[in-house]
Image 1 (cartoon, rainbow, N blue to C red):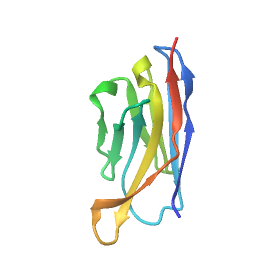
Image 2: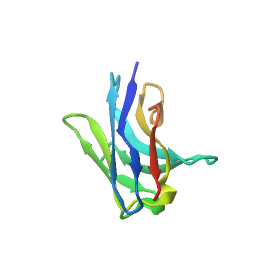
Image 3: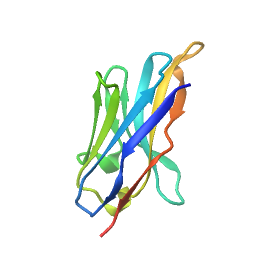
Image 4: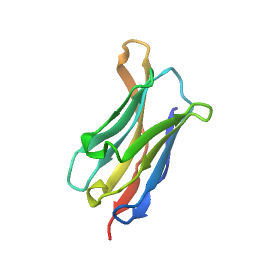
Length: 123
């Protein structure tokens, strides 16, 4: 069973920085995409950043220029460096691992989510 393990998060003041990390254990097939989503209280889960198998990185407009997604291929760890944090960055952050599906490939990958890590930005 694929397990997605997140670490990092915590509390920071506006303008501060935090770093999130994510590792997928027991990957059973090729990785299509990795990414981070976040969910603020009372709101839907929204995309923060993703990286495709080809290395293409996307960011939500709200985090462009402040957040940086990177991947350590040797350790198979995904990092999200969050700088210049704002109060609106507060929320539960979830890592997602999308793996090749035998029937549908990467068009409909198998998704595995972490349990989430809390990020709180306040003064």
